[in-house]
Length: 115
Image (cartoon, rainbow, N blue to C red; front, side):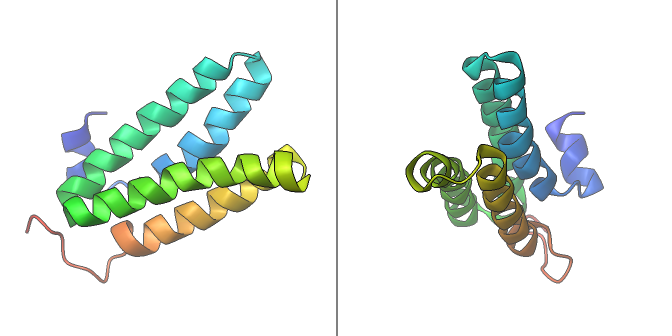
């Protein structure tokens, strides 16, 4: 599915955030290949970023990108630094980041930036 198709169908970018964080972690953990999980994280983030830029503009795209990367870092802090189980840490940050993303970028109450 191309980015233009995602934009036209109103595909929720929050799904890409959830996939990037949770599936990226799961793939890295399941395969033992961290770079593969990182690739999933990066591709999902780039796709979400393109949607944010098109739908809400540069400022929102940059803020949501910072949230996405910050959630990735926070999951590591919670798991390694605080000692939470890894899947719990990833789940918490994924829910928070996807929820904020949905409210800011995907909510029906706002007009599209490009419209």
